[in-house]
Length: 150
Length: 424
Image (cartoon, rainbow over all chains, first blue to last red; front, side, top):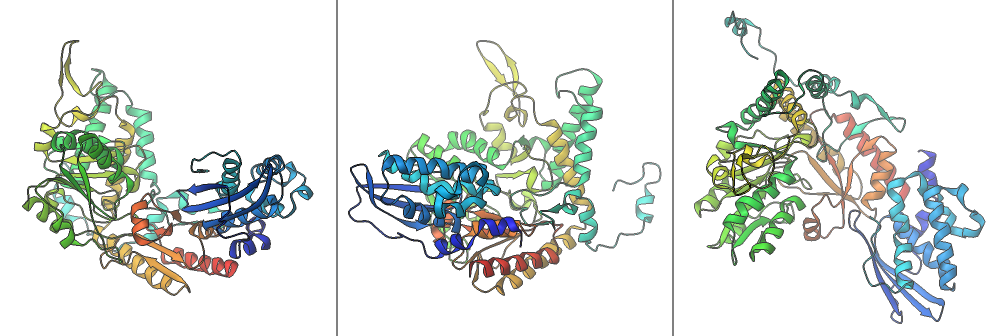
């Protein structure tokens, strides 16, 4: 098997793809956004409970490929408890990671999100990895439209 | 083969070529099939998206540019005459391929999508009015849904959909029930791009014509896989794309019965589609030129003609038998993959093996297979309503061309076993 493939489907990704964290409805959410990649058939609903400036709770539901699901799972785990601006910073670093590669950012700052570093070698899968993040951005900016990264 | 001009009997005396289809020899015409992909031999299983092109097509286009290029139907000079002859020769070549009655029934367009749009916005616009109905089927490609939807929205008409069963077979009885007094047109695919289902066109056309309803056929997937004779099918329109039948992209064909083409208004305005222009009034050219505004894709037409010439050098029954045997073999070996479910199991199929793997998204399948050199398509195949009908977000699709081999299907299966091990 190619090493690039191993880098893409790291154990953390396979694990989060199989058993996504925060994968449920969130009845007391005050933000709800749809993320859709129609060409892939990825479709997620992202729920955010925002308390002032802080993401108090976050969850998602839906279907998608291993990359989009794992990325959504890792995203929710990494932004829970963070402020809106901290989450925005993290998105910026994550985006650089998946589009420009691991040399472009400090991996230590990214925690488990660094496991998505292999995506940069697969240009067609960047949209899978970034779908949940774009949905988060819209949720935090309170935009209502459906997000698509295609 | 044309007989020798001086000794016509030479053709008769030539020993008959054994009508055996040799995929290995066919592959020699496609240099791209010999290139490695990601360090592995390429297994190209995406011909329903676009076929590869034999060198004869590339050479014919190159020769056109090197020796004959000029604008058609305009110049009085030598090259313009050459280019016009090449372009009109291509039209005659297509006529022969479809067995149309006249070359005037062959309109060159960009592809199937443009052909269907042309019919919708000329023929459709004059035939469909408020309260009328346009009938399609549940297995159509977006290209055979959206133009009709746009037409219906424009005209205040209704789009009616004939259902399919879980195997992907069109329910003829249900189709018949939906042909009513307000049905102005039936648009149907000959072969489903997502499922491979072959629709029984003769019966469908008979049902529609029995009620005076004209039939528009999306032939994008049938032209490369079935013998198409538009006079025998008796369809009113038939559309196909050059690039799905071993020709170049950007060229396609709309066949229309002469009586329809003559009465249809033009679509786009511009050069070539006019007879005379004054600022007060323009008179239009006759069909097919009426529908070919602007400088056409001349090299594309030449390439398409070369592709059809190439296609015709193959022993067609044996070639189609090769494809059918591959489809059977693919069905058999894919069925042996644990957790794999074939999508589209109609008794009559051509060229397509669509499937899902339990618990694994088609895109992950596609990415892993790609690293094994196996090229397939994943997604909704531009047939979202069909995917919804089947309760799927997407499928993985392996599709066949004449150059494919059992070995490539074995590579697909070996790749799928890897996918399963990774995501198990």
